[in-house]
Length: 263
Image (tube, rainbow, N blue to C red):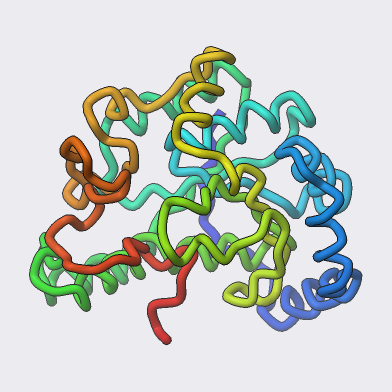
């Protein structure tokens, strides 16, 4: 089942949601989070803790890459009612839709879909064009902001915690993350990165071992998959995220979901 989210129509004031989140977050101190990271070693233990303490105000943000489908498989074993949401930017590959549907059918997962604000998209493309992201890093970050970051922030404002498929070796920025952390970028909510210490080989091995559906673009040389016009296959010897925004000469390779580009 797919659920279309129109988050702008949620009739809850921002002040009320912020207050509720602050009340929840007051339950956890930095010291407690540190202790949890020392105690909870496996991905399943991290997810079990999150589901026991935060569900149903906890959800996996999934782009249906290799890492995310591994986490969905784990969640289905722990709690079939675990929430999964995805950002449809309007520019993703057909192969991503295909694996999304395969996952939905295999695990009977109710996938919550959220979209960018239509007015923001219209204003952006009328001002800068459809392929603005190729023209400058500033334009690329604008597009990521409108199509990804803003919808994510709206969704996260309804939650107390979120789950990711981040791995620490993906970018330099992610090397400082922890499996359980307080997300200062998003109102100090709880952020779970259960497979943070996994390698790419471990990720694909888990997929094969458990017969998990995965994006077929991976077999075509796309280990990291974003929007269709902003992702290419990597060449032998290239970094796994070299195919993301390949025309830019930068090292962070982040769209802004896990790194604040405004600073």
